[in-house]
Amino acid sequence: MPMQYDPFDHQVGLTNVHISEHEAKHTKARLQAREYQLSRVTEAIKNAAEMNRTKLIEDHSKLTTLISRYHIALAPHKRLPREMLQHIFYHVYVGCNNSGPSLQNAPLLLGRICSAWRRTVLRMPELWKDLHFFVENAHSRSQKVNAASMWFSRAGDSPLSLTITDTLENSAPREDFVNQIIVPFSHKFRYLHLVLHPSQIKALFSLPVGSLDSLEELHVVAHSGLDPIPVLPPWAPPISVFSPLARLRRIRIQLTPFVVPRTFKLPWDRLETFRCDSSLQSEDCHELLLSCRPLRKLHVRVFGIKHSGPSTVQIPLQNLRSLTVQLCDAESYDLFFLPLILPALRSLTIYNYDGLPWSPRMYSSLLERSGCQIEELYLGTLDAESRDVLALLQLTPTLKSITFSHNTLIDTDVLRRVGESSIGGRLEEIFLKGTRNLDPILTLLETRENITNADIAPGGRLSTSPLKFIETFCDPEEAVIHSTRIQRLRNFGVEISLLQAQESYFHL
Image 1 (cartoon, rainbow, N blue to C red):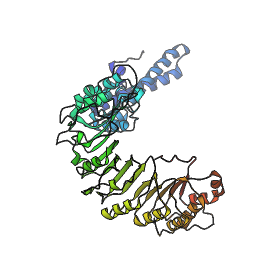
Image 2: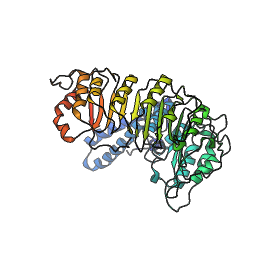
Image 3: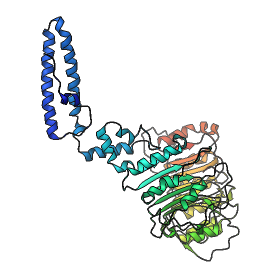
Image 4: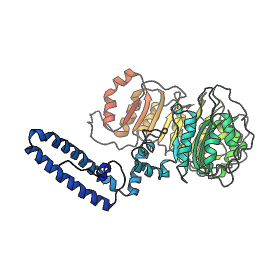
């Protein structure tokens, strides 16, 4: 008797449609019936004559395929609550490579599996709120516009994040990213990372007041390509894209060679992070900081210190924890730091591409005024004498990480005292740029750990000192000579990073 298949058989197991408990019961009953039929066909094959076996084997194969689709239809994920499926989709999305939209990644990949999954994906605005084009050549300008329009139109009221660059140098017409992408969704953006040509920057800064008030973080870089960078911006000040109600808390700008803070009407009094990769005149920077009292993190390039007069005001930044200052002049930088009062400062980075002598007077006066407890100090391009290093470590018992420049001299007595923990007792990592002699460094570490000449096998005593990492460059032959001592320290849990090549003087 030929096998009979109805419409249910032809559809079962071919979609990922969510099934109800009633549908599951019906499917299980049908499955049991088909499994009974399969058992009867199997028995019939054993007893059938040769001429009837071919048809029975064909029926057996069809039933086996059909039963497998019944099992697919009853798979546990078909009965997951929609909220659970959405939760799984979100974690798949988070774990994907989000360097740009791709058919190989969520959410596009999930929407291609079946119509049911596509409907679920389209009902999840959180999968469409972030779009980041980190690889410049992976998508054309028109593809970026089309993807952004599709993504953000599906994001509902979710806060939007966008990373987009336009640095390609070709003759093709440029897409107007500002008017085609940013303007339609301007009130929904929370994060914008833009690298655009000056004409598009001008369009961005020409938006009506309040257009970007929902932004919490803005990173904007002007890219001029092969054209000379204009000294003055191609837009008319003042720039007032933001209203007094703006939510902006973090901003990073790199526009023309230098910027004037008064050009921008920003919510300076609310900023928590400010980074300016264009240069600021020292006096302008001081004036700006007077309006930035809530700052927690500051990174600036300053110039014109030589021509600045002593500040007549103090600049207290009560919340500032991280300060990075790139000095553009080969001049004494004391005048820049003199008005600053930074009681919460924990991380201080100072560098200059000409190399400057370290100013112990500036540092000691900053600590005295502020009463801060610095934990991280980068002096990779500032050259200090050994006595300055000693004074610095004595003044800063809270230091956990420090970087010294190639030309900073550290005599064996200072290293010995660090080893004995009479200074630098809380140090966790030390970066010594330039070529260093290994013996006093290894002696420092061995003294800290109270290691004798006896070998310590892996898994032996654990280190009790906080100092677990030192990085430097040494003569390769010296590393071979001291290889036993180095391995003993590593067995003890202390990492010694010996660079393969000496860093350039200005490498950060």
